Length: 244
Image 1 (cartoon, rainbow, N blue to C red):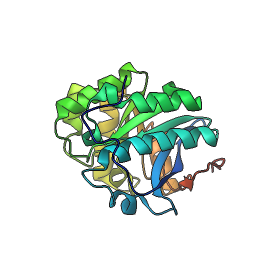
Image 2: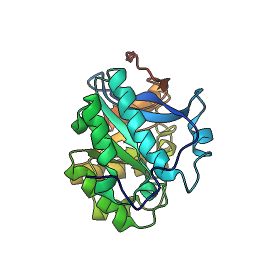
Image 3: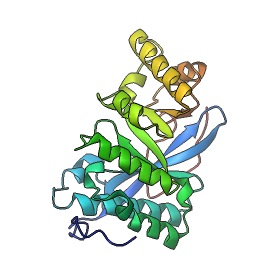
Image 4: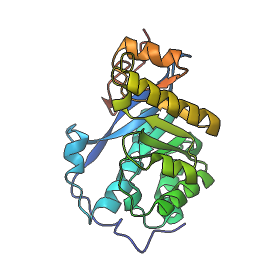
């Protein structure tokens, strides 16, 4: 693989980034399944502020920089689990070629590429769903795990599942909020769980904030979870999760 000649991944970013890490836990086993890398500014600025600085000209560089920074930082802090990285499908020129820096960074840092999960939000407006499917297939071919984030928040999730079945879907936090009392969300989430089970897809419930939400989801058969109830993101660091 060589550097991609058709995109602007060499355009300077003109601002620095860091990574925060939030655990994705296996609540049944009481251990950490993975950490999601979340972009932050050099001084810890939130993701919204950082993303607001990204332009059409710098999106390719930004996407590549986030991947490399996530892997480099995970290696430096000796992340003991899988690493989940968000990617921007519209910042990919050619899937296999654009993976060159990711693979090179993993090799240089000694981070096992088989422990990397690439996730894309369902809310991401992609130019072509066929192209996104090609991206996912290229990632899987290289040994990466794949995930759809914020599942249930947009309109394309089910259509995407008909063309490609990722390893993981992450149920959007809006469907999780107060699920112990929200009957409509209970029906929707159980429908998603049934689809995932039949397709052999693992499920992560996002945005867990209360013990009641945790208990309901456990009773529904969900074991992988993420949210402030367990731990908030930590800048360039991880610490043990205290299970209650």
